[in-house]
Length: 245
Image 1 (cartoon, helix red, strand yellow):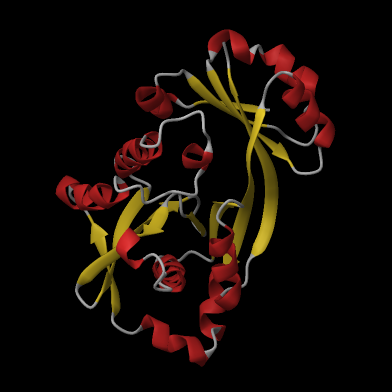
Image 2 (cartoon, one colour):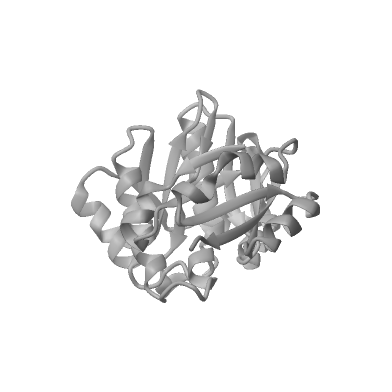
């Protein structure tokens, strides 16, 4: 069982927060032995799908369901096999590496406009409506300080339409901690182009695999992925939270 002190969220929410990732061999007793509720005031747990006994035991002590989370991996070699009928989608697009704070501010200005409205903080009635945006802005600033993370803006005919971050997990594997299409262009079909850009940049940097996580609250995103790209579901987690009195 992995316990992560989510100090980056405490600054925004005012609650000392942890994220707990259960392994398949962990039990409810593992949680009790860790004495999580002595140290933290807000807890988010991720339980491997299939362990309903543990889910119900945590619900019995006032944990509440938030979402299911899917961990996906994409083979980058599939870029060579994308059907030509999709190529028209990529016309007019380019990508720019962001290197300055002012460039990052142009991203966070968009994020502040409730850009992520399907995430678990937006969906959870416990939180105020603007907390999710503040959380993402704070997270972006933290990621920008990490030398293993690079931010890119996605440009369509000279106009910024979205952004993504690429994190180097190993010599051959990249991940995407955060990405999105700006509100004005959300229903323009650009998510295909965003993923294609991540894969292309990763391939050019020598990676052979790309990983990311998505919420089942955002079913349209998963549907969009499946139209063009092949991916593997590596893990599925049931995500719960508890406000600890």
